[in-house]
Amino acid sequence: MIIYNETFNIDDSIHQEWREWVQQYIPKVLATGLFSKLIFSKVLITEEMGGTTYSLQYYTRSEAALKAFQSHISDQLQSEALKRFGDKMLAFRTELEFIDEFKASNNDC
Image (cartoon, rainbow, N blue to C red; front, side, top):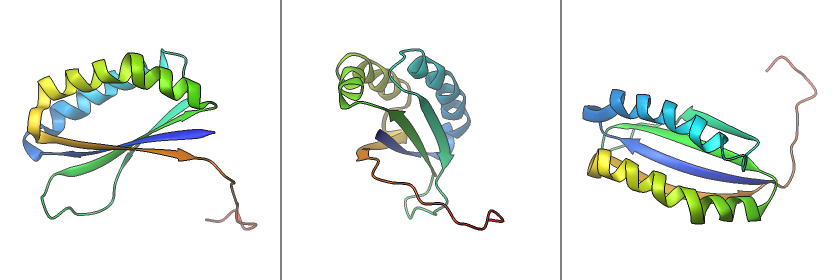
């Protein structure tokens, strides 16, 4: 399994508008059929530069699906975000390969 992670730092001045935009962006990504799920999380750190940080984690079974997304869809969506939010949104991307999952024997966590 491949996990494609996008991390965003969002300036306070566009925070609400960006949250509304990303809630519309997620269904568009899932509608491509390239990902089995997408997790939207708030990063629990305080950045020196301010703003709020979020993570989108896209899950797919194949690197080919990720490459298809990156070459045909991602650039268009990133361009839309840059036009709308400019330098008030900082983003970086990471590709991860799922290796294994470990669970605690105690389910009280």
